[in-house]
Image 1: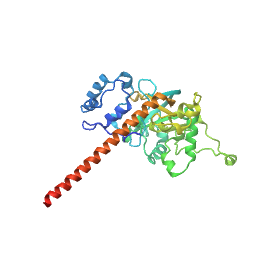
Image 2: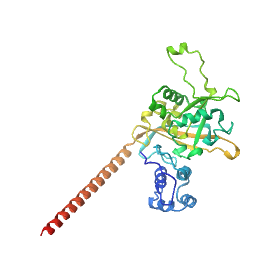
Image 3: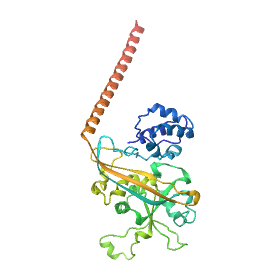
Image 4: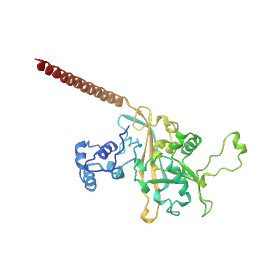
Length: 341
């Protein structure tokens, strides 16, 4: 869907610019060449210039960390609907759902520090969990690199039930492939100030095994979940599906797509705050919106028209390439014939 993530922005590197062009739906159709010239200047000057030509709604949606730090190579998501609050062009929104969630955000450098500014009771357990998996990035897949990489810590009781069920389903799959992919670590809280947590919470057995299981399950209020913010993009609709008018559609991840197609589900992290680290705070909020869409007749007509045009362009391009190759071969043959004479 999207090209490999851009790395740090340099004067000769316009890859971050291309991502900006893709991630912001500009109503005034600013040409790409203008953007190239903007990003050939220093980052600070670029921001000022961009602010003058991009609509405020689109400007507010830009995560500047993308262009300063780059994103992880595996991040495939981009904003699937316009930044100005309008519906996706050519699609009817059957229903939409949104929710705001509270959490805390830490850097890996916070792991050795004592709570509330750090995560020392879970230090070894978190390092072990993350060390066996590829980092999935922070918001928008941003990779701050090294000890500045960010992780989200959330009260397990605040996680929506569909997400909890998904996490537990992933945890039950003990295959090596799934273990490396699974990025939500559920830990118990400290029992006392000196308590050290050594690993993730084991799921309570189900069925007949539950009858012989002596240890009582740990209640949700006594657990936390730790994950890179980039991990939630894989399951965004589940965060807001419960109680929505289209709960069944939003709960079906098979319909969840990176970009709008007929009878699909779209979702995005619409907003996220940053912790006030200078005040010793780690609290954040993030807002998720999801929608179920179907393609309109007008949208289908327009899409098919563009697809036909693109096919025609590709055919003409291939025809021109064939003619050029034939011409080159003919010139070679004529040159050989003249040499023989």
